[in-house]
Length: 353
Image 1 (cartoon, rainbow, N blue to C red):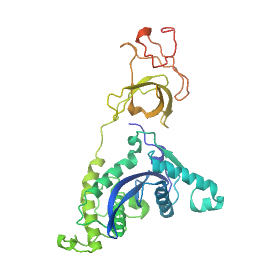
Image 2 (cartoon, rainbow, N blue to C red):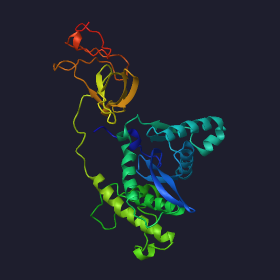
Image 3 (cartoon, rainbow, N blue to C red):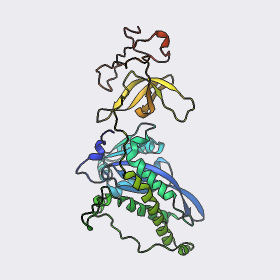
Image 4 (cartoon, rainbow, N blue to C red):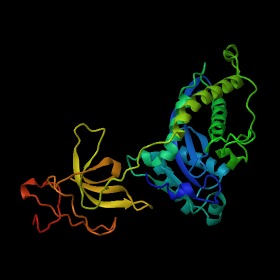
């Protein structure tokens, strides 16, 4: 497994300086006498692993922009925001940039950080957002498992989300010591509130008979209790040690012939040639641009399968050109011209010229 990104290891920075954001939902709420849908934006601190939940009314870029402004107003302007390439996130990023250029520079420094960068993961790479995708899954599953006797109103939903945020931020990040009963494990709330929990828990659970009325406070307490019981079951397996990604494998390089893995297209064996690669801070290739008959496509290396076109002989001899140099590698192959794929433009060498 590769080292953690630099944003996960920043020292002496305030919480939520490096942020990942994603959506989940919808959640049904009661508005007057009708039912509406609401979504939740989950912001996670890449360093302290704290979370911040915001209710989003629609999936438009406008709602996304307002949710980000509410987040910045309470947590401060982040240095870097990472997200998947959703249409609402791309639209919000473009609109925020336009507004930053339109308003006065002094106002820009007052209400937002002009140095904030918004980075998008390549398409089809949910594993690159694992820092927030795993939290989204656990919180989403726990919220979906809540069996409320009636649909909550917007005020109840807002309270439940804040309570859920406190529950998630009280989770242990390290092992719980056994030497002293007064010691406690480090939690995200220690970075936010200087303690594991800033609010005492409710004294007792709500009786089932009291949930049949119209008391929204009892409904809120019951929903938070259900969230806690389910979220604990979701979170505990994530702190177990994994044995994955401990073996070195050869990655793709410029000039390699690959098959693009398309899980949603039946018999979609799309072939192409790598024309450019993106190298991470650790020197390993993370994603690549592939030339196909339909044009250029951008895919992570986990969605690319290298083809052995050497007829079972020794692997291709790769030149010493650095990754991302744009220069095609001198791949020497001992194969006949009939076996070449007419779709792929191979570099000419002494063996196949």
